[in-house]
Image (cartoon, rainbow, N blue to C red; front, side, top):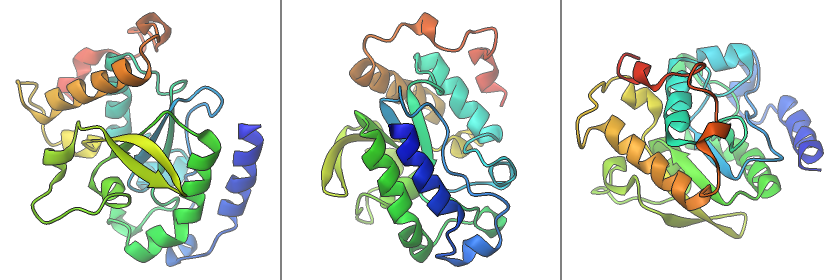
Length: 218
């Protein structure tokens, strides 16, 4: 039922020309993950070049890094997480989507969340966070990440947590205590223990496919 409903939303999205991004896209980037089994919705910023070419979110270098962090935490990207973005089309030069572009795409974003009805939402990066939470000038993603909060989507409250965007981690390679990558580990393990306490780590992608040791080199 979820897959059928999402397919209807996808078809409407494919025909959308609600903002200027529709004229420059190669593909809409609708989602990734198993809608039937996902307990978490992860919301990123916007598609990049690789995503625009493939039609799938988080498949470039940042996406590979995200997959490894999820796997290390015991979270399966393909079973436990349904991945979407604030906008479905790539902004030129990978710039941050405008408020108008996000507003034009909001109906698709909310429809996806309404259909999945996740146990938790992960806001991946500042753009996703600001799409749901009003911040004052003193609040930065570094200060709010890792904290459970409640956000409202289409009148429904959801448990949510903000994490660093993996593209930020590509510029910060340190694995020392307190580093962004170590904090990312801690946040995802918190999410795993809170939302997926009964998931067996052995059920996640095997270490032979994704080796956490590469995290410090990506």
